[in-house]
Length: 309
Image (tube, rainbow, N blue to C red):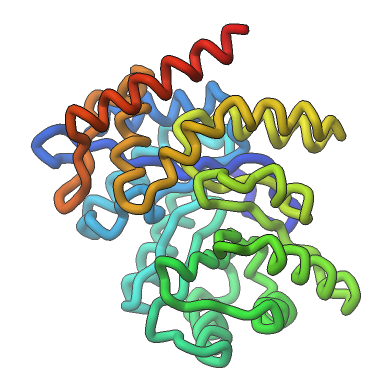
């Protein structure tokens, strides 16, 4: 069991894909190889059952099985965070408690479209914390493009102040650099505790986000070694080297970041890297055409050429 998640978390908490076989069943052997791959690439933590992990397509029994498999495979080497977002509070609490019992470091919770005001969002996180007996470290997932629940900096600060178990913000508002800077500046000015901020959006804005006060990345780019390298170089103060490394991968990052379709690209890339048996995206989900494969062929060939120089 790893230590519980706290405000000092930094680095790369990779968002794990959920591997499926071509018949839509869960590929447990590929869960093992994918977990090993993430660890070999130097990630700081692993986040499972997120949106990229197709959690919404899993039954409760499948979610439990995936969670147990990953946590067992990691065996305490890095923290494992479990996405538990669900409009049904009872299901959210049940999965959260099960995750913590299995050895998770914390849970990730996103608001849902019914939380259509700051007040509703604030009340929701108060209620979730109460339902979890104020014992479970939480990540606030701020992804309004998907959740349809935008939140203001002032509301986030109120949550930070009143819900100590919220120890991290997964920042993926878009555009969001100003929001990140505002949160850091206002929190410091008001003497609020400094929570961890890790960023999503496929890593598309990672160098700028690090410069605005983020502590790392929580996203699922198919080349986690890039995310790790950029964060390490930035932390060491070599900003130009971090930018240079990022720039090598940028064409692949932006291609992978296409809404909806990008998940198919990400899983195909992981498949081509020999990490998962199949690139299957569970139904309903995108598939790649022959022309799509040709585009990826060229992108990855050009990446290999740049990395070989």
